[in-house]
Image (cartoon, rainbow, N blue to C red; front, side, top):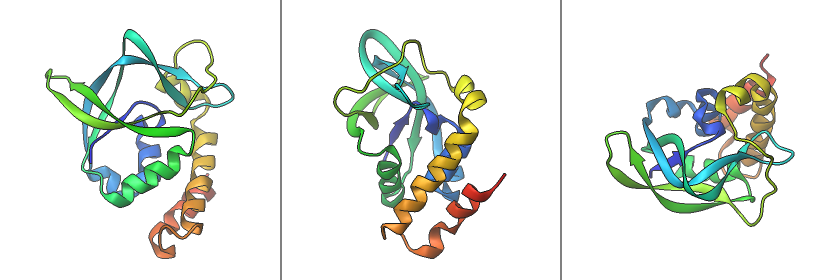
Amino acid sequence: MDFFFYGTLLDEEVRRLVLGPEAARLELVPARLAGYRRFPKLRSSAPVLARRGGASVDGLLVRGLDRRQAARLRHYEGRNYRLARCKVRLAEGEACAAMVFLGRGRIPLRRGSWRLREWQRRSKRAYLRLAALWLAAYRQAGYETRGRVRWVKRWAARD
């Protein structure tokens, strides 16, 4: 399955936490999604896409995710996001279909744009700890076996 990442999953550590050690083997291709703009969510450090004519969002087309990784992604994104099929354009101009997580319903937005470097500087450390706990809940719900995700607990406990 191919996915378009536009927010926190652009960060390599977040991708590894969410998708597991296999994330290093995925194919990552710079891509652009037209017709949307990336905004910071109100009371959150994560972004959300909102339709905006003439706008576009740069991100990554991620190829080669398996079903387990796709299920972990759905858990990571949570109930405030829904999966949609969109057309993204690669740097060479080629268009291809990808799954993207869009906000479900009306999500309150903050003014301005969400920027990866700013997020990494201000929010990443705390975000990684919360994300690790959230993903540990995925295991506790019985979606995966105990041995496969021990690294999530180690990640949350690291300094």
